[in-house]
Amino acid sequence: MEEADLFYRQLPKVELHAHLNGSVSFSTIEKLVARKPHLNIEHGMTAIRSGQRRTLDEADIPIICQRKRRRGQRAGCFVRTRRRCFQVFKVIHQLVDTEEDILMVAKDVIREFAADGVKYLELRSTPRKEKTTGMTKRRYVETVIEAIRQCKNEGVDIEVRFLVAVDRRNGAEVAMETVKLAEDFMLSTGGLVVGLDLSGDPTVGHGRDFLPALQKAKNCGLKLSLHLSEVPSQADESELLLNIPPDRIGHGTFLHPEVGGSQSLVDKVRKHNTPLELCLTSNVKGQTVSSYSQHHFLYWYQMGHPSVICTDDKGVFCTDLSQEYQLAASTFNLSQEDMWTLSHKAIDCTFAPDLQQQLHQKWLELQPTLFQL
Ligand SMILES: CNc1ncnc2c1ncn2[C@@H]1O[C@H](COP(=O)(O)O)[C@@H](O)[C@H]1O
Image (tube, rainbow, N blue to C red; front, side):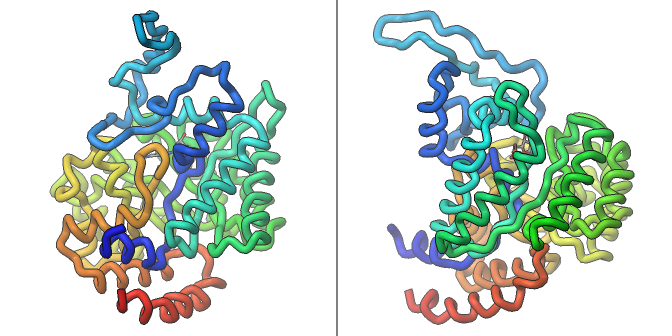
């Protein structure tokens, strides 16, 4: 491992934007595929490798076609290259449809983040009911919580909290039910469930439909992390959602005036000092940002606004948090000390105020050895 790789791996980090099923690694996918060979799923269908890009919308897919048997080739399923980002999640959901799968996936993801030097992780996931296997939304959340507890008992060196996710595709009524579920778990898990996420295909539905559910969540003490302006032309929606206001913003790619947002949106974000969760590789591979150097990280970072580097979907986008830190440093010419400060400041953006002092302490303990490398 090169010295710079080692530095970013050993740098203590905070991950605040990680979708559980988007974070499933290659080795876990292999275990899932072995459990469900009848699905004929190949790894190329669950990840977007380097050099590959996908647009975010999921319309006019899947184009899962039967491959004609040619000499030297296995028959089976393949997906045409124009498959889009959100289709990939549907494939992963087919593979992860029992409590046993969720437990394995969540434990593997937690261990992998820990091995990557992440000391505090906020996982988010959409509770799913699966008729065929009998999994309920409540059991789904209970199983993720069980995975977090088991990792803790096994001594994995990471603190984990959970955000219950609302998928915008499922509409306002389901969103309200999800808030109720999140509230129940916030009260019954001793602080492991800390908030609510609004995510899903940003081109589907309108944020105004979710205002009552989001407001209810906020009123009952859940922290709000909202995907906002992830795609262009959502200024009206962002304006409405920023009025709540959220506690953190996912992506915020098109908030600023240079990319079709507005100064009024930027002013709102700045007024509340709302941290942004920024996911470089996800945005480049999802084609909402044309290249790393064009990423809006620089806009907010130069302003001194709280900006936290995150992975989004480390499995789907074939990345990890160390790599994202390293990419940001090399793209924007930032020093290792700058990246240290960035990871340290991320502690103040977590939804676990009870842990912040302990995390600051940990960072200070690790600092001398890190800079001796
Ligand atoms: C690429 N940027 C993104 N924008 C919006 N939502 C995203 C996302 N990446 C993932 N998700 C949301 O997370 C789900 C998968 O994890 P869970 O099944 O919930 O654990 C996706 O179905 C989508 O709703």
